[in-house]
Length: 75
Image (cartoon, rainbow, N blue to C red; front, top):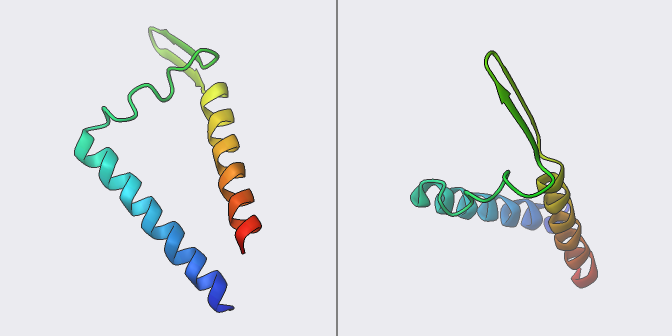
């Protein structure tokens, strides 16, 4: 394993820990809008629940693509 990959894994782990701490301390209120965006499908009926977060997952995909592009650009 190369030292660069090790540094990247540590950075990703720290980022995940910071985001988790923010969500934990905020009680989820920090990201309460996430999953309720226009385009996310939510159907709730007695005995049946369907949740398809199309727009939320598209947003995550775009953000991760941007982060990975920035990492590749500067490494």
